[in-house]
Length: 89
Image (cartoon, rainbow, N blue to C red; front, top):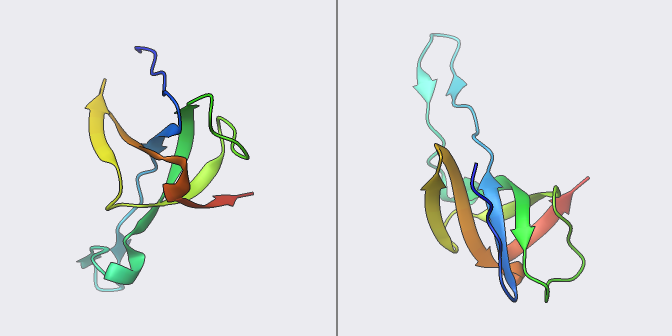
């Protein structure tokens, strides 16, 4: 895999794929609710100006923030550190 290096206040996260729910009858329920427009991501790289975060942190980010890109079949998002809502522990 290629190396990704973030600059300044930028954070690169890898989006964690969430599984669709299946009803008792076998119907696939897609997550389309706006209240659930947040998703989990793992911090892959961050710029030297970013504080209070570390590579490997599992965090909550908005799906509507930053720039989404694919590299080697994996999905990443480039965003500013202020767009990370929370770190899960």
